[in-house]
Image (cartoon, rainbow, N blue to C red; front, side):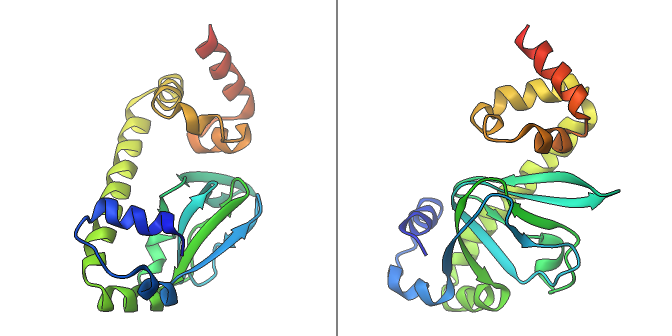
Length: 190
């Protein structure tokens, strides 16, 4: 576990005062390389990841092409929430978009952590509320705007993020070909 995660917990739940050292047995930290796969579709999903540095992304395969649906930057959590709760085979994959440092825990450790530190349930509830709200907003924005308007929305709302996302991954995320993405990029500039 990193101090960054501990500070993130305290930021969202100011009343949390458990000793940092008491949380360490539940969490592990490691570095992953760009494009390293953390979870593959069909594997049992039993891990949740916190991004200390870098970026992870969630995707599924369709006709041998990645369909990117979510990103996790610094201070974000990511897992296949569809299957993490009940240890079913994953319906999504997770990979590192950049070299990244992550803190992670298994479902067993997650449950034990919440039992030992009930106030952390409030922290994770806030995390999940934000993630769900963001997913719904993306779905609404995506469904109610043109690809051009969605590109403009994303470019102006997340300017620092779009600089970090490789074009092929971003094209997949917004559901366009590389050629269409190039047109959108050129139109945005002009």
